[in-house]
Image (cartoon, rainbow, N blue to C red; front, side, top):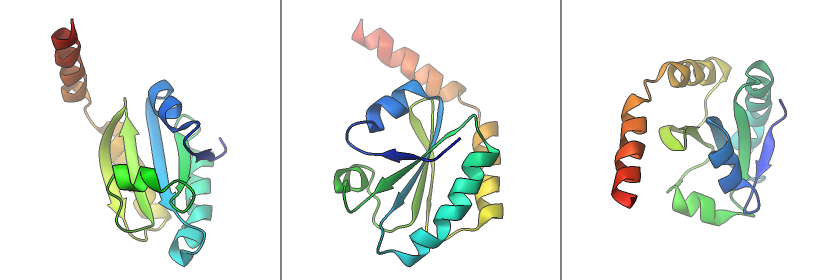
Length: 123
């Protein structure tokens, strides 16, 4: 699957409609960010069941503000609309593969329970 450019128009919908999303916060002036892009794209190709998206912090700074991304490159792993892992700084392909493996194996029952409790409060 191709990497999706995430922005104001599609970020929320992408998170809500996909159970597994990995977001790369980057900027075109950031050499480590640009160097990481082929690694991120390769991971996207190897994991077609996951949505891989990139947020340009220059054109959409409100996302890095909201998620408190103070350094780039930065990775945010989202499963079932919950952020379950962040990674700041340069990483290679093997480290990204380990993050993906850990994220796949992550027990999401506590998150589901939280959502159920919140839904009960709203009713």
